[in-house]
Length: 149
Image (cartoon, rainbow, N blue to C red; front, side, top):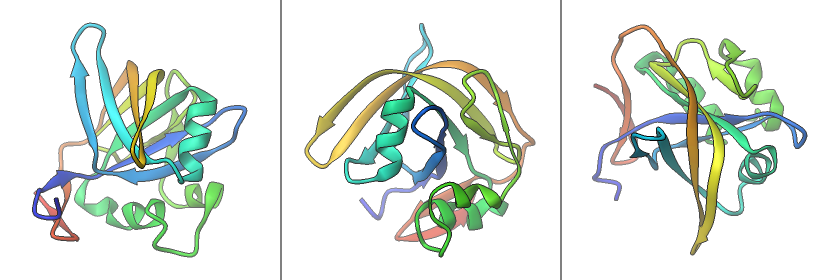
C-alpha cells in the first residue's frame, strides 16, 4: 500500500470526551444523498476513542504547506493530545469539531456508523457542513514520503 498515493487529512473532534485529532490517508466518499464519507483509524488510537464518544468529526484536507501539521497529528513530534492544536489556525463549523483554516476543504461530520474491522475502526460520517479553502497544491503521501500535487 505504500506505493499507492493518497491525499493527507487531519481528522479532528471535540466534545464531552475532549479535543483530539489524527492524520489519516484512509478517507473516501461513501454516498451523495445524504452526503457522507468514510475514515479508517487504528482501534488503539486515543483520538479514535474520543471521536467515537464525541460523535462528531471534521476531515481537513491538507495542502502542501501543511506538511508539518501532518507530522504533528501523526505523532511524529513531541506534541501530544490537545497540545497538537497549538500549531495551525483553527476554527469551528457546525459540529464544533476543529476546522483547519488553511485546509483545501473541511468536511464537518456527525457520526453515522462505526464498525471494527480487524485492527481498525471504519467510521462513516454524514457531512453537515463543507468549507472550501484556497486553491493550492494538495499534500499526498506515497512511498512513506510527502509530496505536493
